[in-house]
Image (cartoon, rainbow, N blue to C red; front, side, top):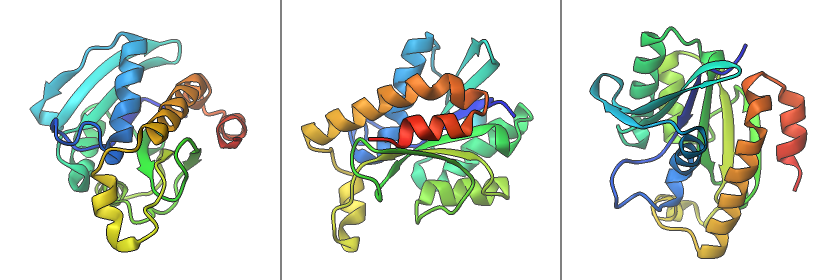
Length: 190
């Protein structure tokens, strides 16, 4: 099943723009630039969305503006409106359990404690959507996680995350048509 909706997770507002938790927004902004797609704020979708016509068909991009913990509200609203099935959705998010620069791609699975994923799973009623996990590293102390994800990464970490974003966009044509194994081989290697 081809991907019809790509969601980048993050928090709205300039104070969060450069924080690790916004890695999903960073990738979507880069993709929108590449595809020359223009963002529009849309209250009925609780987010900013754009659309692009690619060889695979029309693809919608979504940046929920609900704050991370309520991301599912935005995803559910847009998916219901355009009749997009969970298996046609790719969610891009920051991942504590991967070093900066590492990427993992999969269909379904748990939420790893990620509140954005938790809410999307709850609202869609299934974990069966694609995920592109962008490594941001872990602070080492579980009590520091909230503080860590809401801070800017060191410049060398941001460079590694940016390289992962470029690599991910390069893999997107295969992601869009469901070449899962090929994408995993390309993205999971160092």
